Length: 266
Image 1 (cartoon, one colour):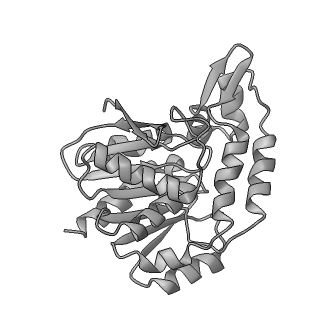
Image 2: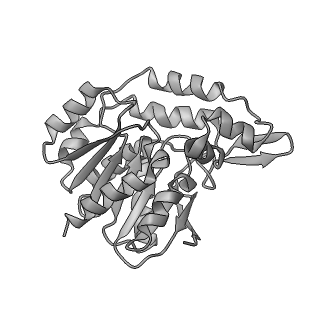
Image 3: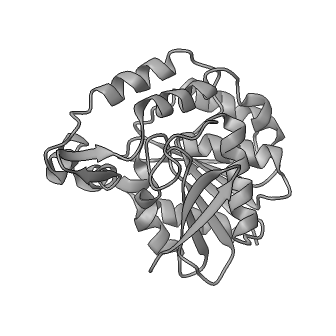
Protein backbone atom coordinates (compact mmCIF):
# COMPACT_ATOMS: atom_id res chain seq x y z
CA UNK A 1 0.00 0.00 0.00
CA UNK A 2 1.23 3.48 -0.87
CA UNK A 3 0.23 6.48 1.21
CA UNK A 4 -0.82 9.79 -0.31
CA UNK A 5 -0.30 12.83 1.91
CA UNK A 6 -3.37 14.99 2.48
CA UNK A 7 -3.27 18.31 4.27
CA UNK A 8 -6.33 19.72 6.02
CA UNK A 9 -6.18 23.23 7.48
CA UNK A 10 -8.70 24.09 10.16
CA UNK A 11 -8.64 27.36 12.05
CA UNK A 12 -5.12 28.01 10.80
CA UNK A 13 -3.87 24.66 12.14
CA UNK A 14 -2.24 22.34 9.61
CA UNK A 15 -3.23 18.68 9.91
CA UNK A 16 -1.35 16.08 7.89
CA UNK A 17 -3.09 12.83 7.00
CA UNK A 18 -1.87 9.66 5.32
CA UNK A 19 -4.49 8.42 2.89
CA UNK A 20 -4.12 4.85 1.72
CA UNK A 21 -7.12 4.95 -0.55
CA UNK A 22 -8.93 1.64 -0.75
CA UNK A 23 -12.21 0.41 -2.21
CA UNK A 24 -14.59 0.28 0.73
CA UNK A 25 -15.91 2.13 3.77
CA UNK A 26 -13.52 4.58 5.37
CA UNK A 27 -11.54 3.90 8.53
CA UNK A 28 -9.87 6.79 10.37
CA UNK A 29 -6.95 5.86 12.64
CA UNK A 30 -6.10 8.11 15.61
CA UNK A 31 -2.85 7.58 17.51
CA UNK A 32 -2.24 8.18 21.20
CA UNK A 33 -0.41 10.96 23.03
CA UNK A 34 3.13 11.57 21.72
CA UNK A 35 2.43 9.15 18.88
CA UNK A 36 2.20 9.52 15.12
CA UNK A 37 0.21 8.24 12.15
CA UNK A 38 2.94 5.81 11.08
CA UNK A 39 2.44 3.56 14.08
CA UNK A 40 -0.69 2.23 12.36
CA UNK A 41 1.15 1.09 9.20
CA UNK A 42 0.96 -2.66 9.84
CA UNK A 43 -2.76 -2.52 10.62
CA UNK A 44 -3.46 -0.15 7.74
CA UNK A 45 -1.80 -2.51 5.28
CA UNK A 46 -4.15 -5.28 6.36
CA UNK A 47 -7.24 -3.07 6.19
CA UNK A 48 -6.46 -1.49 2.81
CA UNK A 49 -7.84 -4.35 0.73
CA UNK A 50 -11.39 -3.63 1.89
CA UNK A 51 -11.30 -0.08 3.25
CA UNK A 52 -10.15 3.43 2.55
CA UNK A 53 -7.69 3.96 5.38
CA UNK A 54 -6.76 7.43 6.66
CA UNK A 55 -4.23 7.85 9.48
CA UNK A 56 -4.05 11.30 11.05
CA UNK A 57 -1.11 13.07 12.64
CA UNK A 58 -3.15 14.86 15.27
CA UNK A 59 -2.45 18.47 16.21
CA UNK A 60 0.84 18.86 18.04
CA UNK A 61 2.13 15.55 16.66
CA UNK A 62 4.16 14.23 13.76
CA UNK A 63 4.03 16.34 10.60
CA UNK A 64 1.04 18.37 11.79
CA UNK A 65 1.10 21.77 13.51
CA UNK A 66 3.67 21.41 16.28
CA UNK A 67 2.51 24.18 18.61
CA UNK A 68 -1.22 24.74 18.06
CA UNK A 69 -2.72 27.41 20.25
CA UNK A 70 -5.63 25.18 21.23
CA UNK A 71 -5.11 21.66 22.57
CA UNK A 72 -8.56 21.29 24.09
CA UNK A 73 -10.54 18.11 23.65
CA UNK A 74 -13.02 20.09 21.56
CA UNK A 75 -10.23 21.09 19.17
CA UNK A 76 -9.16 17.48 18.61
CA UNK A 77 -12.78 16.48 17.97
CA UNK A 78 -13.31 19.34 15.52
CA UNK A 79 -10.17 18.22 13.68
CA UNK A 80 -11.64 14.75 13.12
CA UNK A 81 -14.86 16.28 11.80
CA UNK A 82 -12.88 18.54 9.45
CA UNK A 83 -10.74 15.67 8.14
CA UNK A 84 -13.83 13.59 7.40
CA UNK A 85 -15.49 16.50 5.59
CA UNK A 86 -12.47 17.66 3.57
CA UNK A 87 -11.46 14.15 2.49
CA UNK A 88 -15.04 13.17 1.66
CA UNK A 89 -15.22 10.30 4.16
CA UNK A 90 -18.79 9.05 4.41
CA UNK A 91 -19.56 7.93 7.98
CA UNK A 92 -16.13 6.50 8.73
CA UNK A 93 -15.33 4.02 11.45
CA UNK A 94 -13.10 5.69 14.04
CA UNK A 95 -10.28 3.61 15.54
CA UNK A 96 -8.35 5.29 18.33
CA UNK A 97 -5.64 4.13 20.71
CA UNK A 98 -5.22 5.66 24.17
CA UNK A 99 -5.75 9.43 23.88
CA UNK A 100 -6.76 8.91 20.25
CA UNK A 101 -9.48 6.61 21.54
CA UNK A 102 -10.64 9.34 23.88
CA UNK A 103 -10.88 11.69 20.89
CA UNK A 104 -12.78 9.09 18.88
CA UNK A 105 -15.22 8.52 21.75
CA UNK A 106 -15.94 12.24 22.16
CA UNK A 107 -16.40 12.59 18.39
CA UNK A 108 -18.89 9.74 18.25
CA UNK A 109 -20.84 11.23 21.17
CA UNK A 110 -20.93 14.77 19.79
CA UNK A 111 -21.53 13.86 16.12
CA UNK A 112 -23.66 10.70 16.04
CA UNK A 113 -24.51 11.10 12.37
CA UNK A 114 -20.85 11.21 11.38
CA UNK A 115 -19.51 7.97 12.84
CA UNK A 116 -20.48 4.53 11.54
CA UNK A 117 -18.73 2.58 14.30
CA UNK A 118 -16.22 3.12 17.08
CA UNK A 119 -13.19 1.06 18.09
CA UNK A 120 -11.40 1.94 21.32
CA UNK A 121 -7.93 0.43 21.74
CA UNK A 122 -6.60 0.71 25.28
CA UNK A 123 -8.95 3.63 25.90
CA UNK A 124 -11.77 4.12 28.38
CA UNK A 125 -13.90 7.03 29.66
CA UNK A 126 -12.20 7.27 33.03
CA UNK A 127 -12.81 9.83 35.77
CA UNK A 128 -10.51 12.88 35.81
CA UNK A 129 -7.02 12.24 37.22
CA UNK A 130 -5.06 15.39 38.11
CA UNK A 131 -1.89 13.31 38.45
CA UNK A 132 -1.90 12.26 34.79
CA UNK A 133 -0.12 15.35 33.38
CA UNK A 134 2.61 15.02 36.01
CA UNK A 135 3.06 11.36 35.18
CA UNK A 136 3.31 11.93 31.44
CA UNK A 137 5.67 14.86 31.99
CA UNK A 138 7.98 12.72 34.10
CA UNK A 139 7.91 9.98 31.47
CA UNK A 140 8.80 12.36 28.66
CA UNK A 141 11.57 13.86 30.79
CA UNK A 142 13.06 10.37 31.12
CA UNK A 143 13.75 10.17 27.40
CA UNK A 144 17.51 10.55 26.81
CA UNK A 145 17.03 13.17 24.10
CA UNK A 146 18.72 13.49 21.71
CA UNK A 147 19.08 9.79 21.02
CA UNK A 148 22.52 9.15 19.51
CA UNK A 149 21.07 6.80 16.89
CA UNK A 150 17.79 5.36 15.75
CA UNK A 151 18.90 1.98 17.05
CA UNK A 152 19.44 3.51 20.49
CA UNK A 153 15.90 4.86 20.41
CA UNK A 154 14.47 1.48 19.40
CA UNK A 155 16.27 -0.10 22.33
CA UNK A 156 15.10 2.58 24.79
CA UNK A 157 11.48 2.03 23.77
CA UNK A 158 11.73 -1.71 24.38
CA UNK A 159 12.81 -3.06 21.01
CA UNK A 160 10.65 -5.14 18.69
CA UNK A 161 7.73 -3.63 16.78
CA UNK A 162 6.84 -1.27 19.64
CA UNK A 163 10.38 0.11 19.84
CA UNK A 164 10.48 0.46 16.07
CA UNK A 165 7.11 2.20 16.08
CA UNK A 166 8.10 4.78 18.66
CA UNK A 167 11.48 5.37 17.02
CA UNK A 168 9.72 5.98 13.70
CA UNK A 169 8.13 9.02 15.30
CA UNK A 170 11.50 10.71 15.79
CA UNK A 171 13.33 12.97 13.35
CA UNK A 172 17.05 13.30 12.72
CA UNK A 173 18.90 16.47 13.76
CA UNK A 174 22.57 17.41 13.68
CA UNK A 175 22.99 16.27 17.29
CA UNK A 176 20.87 13.10 17.10
CA UNK A 177 17.25 11.92 17.00
CA UNK A 178 14.53 14.04 18.59
CA UNK A 179 10.73 13.85 18.98
CA UNK A 180 8.46 15.58 16.49
CA UNK A 181 6.50 17.20 19.31
CA UNK A 182 7.09 19.56 22.21
CA UNK A 183 6.88 18.24 25.74
CA UNK A 184 4.77 21.09 27.10
CA UNK A 185 2.20 20.65 24.31
CA UNK A 186 1.84 16.98 25.22
CA UNK A 187 1.38 17.74 28.91
CA UNK A 188 -1.17 20.46 28.14
CA UNK A 189 -3.11 18.11 25.82
CA UNK A 190 -3.30 15.40 28.46
CA UNK A 191 -4.26 17.93 31.14
CA UNK A 192 -7.51 18.49 29.26
CA UNK A 193 -8.62 14.93 30.01
CA UNK A 194 -7.87 15.45 33.72
CA UNK A 195 -10.43 18.24 34.02
CA UNK A 196 -13.65 16.56 32.94
CA UNK A 197 -15.00 13.04 32.99
CA UNK A 198 -15.80 11.44 29.64
CA UNK A 199 -18.43 9.18 31.19
CA UNK A 200 -21.37 11.46 30.23
CA UNK A 201 -20.15 11.43 26.63
CA UNK A 202 -19.73 7.66 26.75
CA UNK A 203 -23.39 7.24 27.68
CA UNK A 204 -24.37 9.23 24.57
CA UNK A 205 -22.44 7.06 22.11
CA UNK A 206 -25.03 5.35 19.95
CA UNK A 207 -22.99 3.61 17.28
CA UNK A 208 -21.70 0.01 17.47
CA UNK A 209 -18.59 -0.07 19.63
CA UNK A 210 -15.68 -2.46 20.06
CA UNK A 211 -13.33 -2.00 23.02
CA UNK A 212 -9.97 -3.78 22.82
CA UNK A 213 -7.77 -4.00 25.90
CA UNK A 214 -4.31 -5.39 26.51
CA UNK A 215 -3.85 -8.22 28.97
CA UNK A 216 -1.33 -5.92 30.72
CA UNK A 217 -3.57 -2.90 30.32
CA UNK A 218 -2.76 0.52 31.72
CA UNK A 219 -6.47 0.88 32.47
CA UNK A 220 -7.52 -0.53 35.85
CA UNK A 221 -9.99 -3.40 35.71
CA UNK A 222 -12.45 -1.47 37.87
CA UNK A 223 -12.53 1.34 35.28
CA UNK A 224 -13.16 -1.14 32.48
CA UNK A 225 -15.97 -2.77 34.47
CA UNK A 226 -17.54 0.63 35.16
CA UNK A 227 -17.28 1.54 31.48
CA UNK A 228 -19.01 -1.64 30.33
CA UNK A 229 -21.68 -1.38 33.02
CA UNK A 230 -22.67 2.03 31.70
CA UNK A 231 -23.02 0.79 28.13
CA UNK A 232 -23.77 -2.95 28.05
CA UNK A 233 -24.02 -3.28 24.22
CA UNK A 234 -20.26 -2.70 23.88
CA UNK A 235 -18.21 -5.64 22.60
CA UNK A 236 -15.08 -5.94 24.77
CA UNK A 237 -12.02 -8.10 24.13
CA UNK A 238 -8.76 -8.63 26.01
CA UNK A 239 -5.72 -9.61 23.92
CA UNK A 240 -3.32 -12.03 25.65
CA UNK A 241 0.37 -11.23 25.87
CA UNK A 242 0.06 -7.55 25.04
CA UNK A 243 0.64 -4.15 26.62
CA UNK A 244 -0.64 -0.63 26.04
CA UNK A 245 0.74 -0.48 22.48
CA UNK A 246 -1.02 -3.64 21.35
CA UNK A 247 -1.82 -2.06 17.97
CA UNK A 248 1.91 -2.21 17.22
CA UNK A 249 2.61 -5.46 19.10
CA UNK A 250 -0.11 -7.57 17.50
CA UNK A 251 -1.61 -5.76 14.51
CA UNK A 252 -2.67 -9.08 13.00
CA UNK A 253 -4.89 -9.86 15.98
CA UNK A 254 -6.33 -6.36 16.02
CA UNK A 255 -7.10 -6.72 12.32
CA UNK A 256 -8.93 -10.00 12.94
CA UNK A 257 -11.00 -8.36 15.64
CA UNK A 258 -11.82 -5.39 13.42
CA UNK A 259 -12.70 -7.61 10.47
CA UNK A 260 -15.10 -9.66 12.58
CA UNK A 261 -16.60 -6.54 14.11
CA UNK A 262 -17.12 -4.91 10.71
CA UNK A 263 -18.64 -8.08 9.27
CA UNK A 264 -21.22 -7.94 12.03
CA UNK A 265 -22.25 -4.43 11.07
CA UNK A 266 -23.78 -5.64 7.82
